[in-house]
Length: 369
Ligand code: NAD
Ligand code: GLY
Image 1: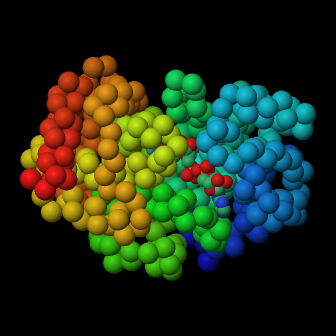
Image 2: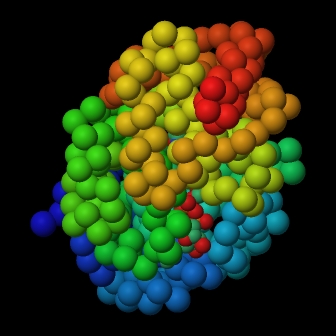
């Protein structure tokens, strides 16, 4: 039985469908939301394509679609302007029309790249997300943020372009390399931290990949339910609720920067960022003192780092680059309690002073003082 969640954006509503083995039924699901489409252009990557494309293609063809594919090299380096331009050209060579659609089969990289291509080709065509990583299933495939990276930074050119449908087959997670699965767990843990204390406790009681996979439908459903709520409340990430998803990300960006975007995955950086943000919250007398320990423990149980060292220059660069930054002020996401995140507005100067205090305090803790 499939589980379904509706993302209720007026005029752009869509469903998230969640079911084991769903890939083999993708054709029927796509046909139901794309009644006029003749051609589908699938974008996948060099790891995911060999594993899942044939199964998807067979199902799409059985539903009467003519299917085209482009396989991009796996990894973040494909999320760039030249891959995007190649997709546009190939879509035109495939004679895609405005009633046809793009399908993203892969992780967040493929979803962001294919989504941006869909948002821009022919001034916008329909788009279906078929996420195959844990991160993409709980986060990036829902909400319509699509983007490529620029030399100046990650995700700096993009659009809000909601998919027509999101199809999640939890079975695809079985082939994920362990570090990719664990990085996705950082985002799963984040939902518990920001919005659902009971879900946090549920995760604490299941501290391994096997235990999480045993309850994966519940995990995906809970995360997508929380994500869709923030998207419906704040589609453009301006009014507030969607900003709560940034918990751990501002400091996480500093750690990604410190590791030159190669040493730490996004999920690892977010894990350390959540631990640091929890401690910052205690320092600001907002977060109860027992919270940082619980977050560190759960991150550690999934093999995620709980602290990453970083210079004040890197913190300052990340705070300045943060897209949640409005003018000279910054909105740090802190916890009033486990399961209750708040937007904590500060000047950049005050934020950096607070981070400096946190760095000095954690340095003293590490020295055993
Ligand atoms: P990814 O897409 O690079 O996938 C990670 C690795 O797993 C890749 O090597 C990929 O080939 C492989 N892979 C994917 N599915 C697989 C499967 N089922 N079996 C085996 N291997 C598989 O990375 P990601 O972590 O999924 O996504 C990261 C990207 O998502 C970043 O670019 C980030 O900026 C973006 N992102 C976007 C949003 C958003 O709202 N749009 C949110 C968070 C992150
Ligand atoms: N991943 C953050 C967002 O979708 O807003």
